[in-house]
Length: 337
Ligand SMILES: [Fe+2]
Image (cartoon, rainbow, N blue to C red; front, side, top):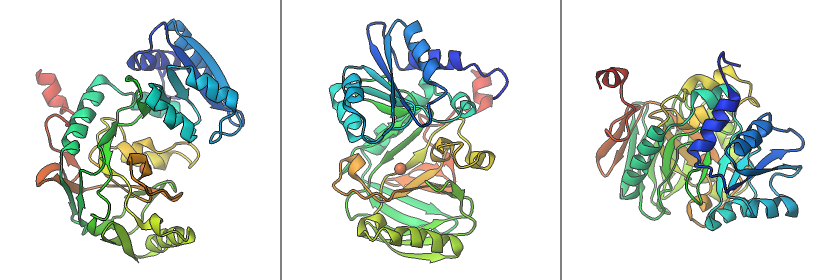
């Protein structure tokens, strides 16, 4: 653990960002098979804030038992330390439940600890993405693809759950939406060093994806291309070839290199998904954004050194975030203030 890392203080500060009020109730969810080391910190921090708190230890994270669901429904904030994918949890957001997922190791929680500045920049990006009609993405490696936008809302993660109905994950700072159905056309060239999730691996050589009317129609390249092709083919489901969410990374402290420091079970990969100026491309479902397409295969692929244009406005240029209201101020600019 990094020197000076104080989990009690981090949890206190996180619950303050989540605007936990003394009259509120917190549910802390953890896995019976692999209890989270954060459960005690979360419970103590909630009680120190004057809130009441319940620990829920469950064996099936994707099919929560009735008693756990009942406790969650009575709560204002669910601290999910096991990353449940139970659809009823997402369904509860409409009733005002706030959900905060926290599964990364302590060093990542501390290094990428979110701020109100992250929130401000992410909401500015969400607003900009929300009124765009097209996204055009290019790279020196050969990417040149256009996505129609406007059918689905823009969303962001900024690392804490402060508003009623907000689902977020500590840490993370990125913005995304889903392309209009059938509107994605062009070529995506995944380059050496781009990241493949959930495999948590760095690509070793370029992979060329041809995209027509919203679906990948050809995959070519070397071993990495063969691997991706084989994974997608194994599902026997045409929807795995569709384009899922698209967006860009805005984390001030997320690092592309982090997967090189952990074994695969050691991190969930929020660094890779959120590092500043990435283009996060993904494949498969769009049900999470309001679309009708669902499929169990979902690849998140953060790409480096790409340029993202919204309606011809440069938003990211070769991995550098451009709009003033989305940029992390340079250290010199901070010092001059
Ligand atoms: Fe994803």
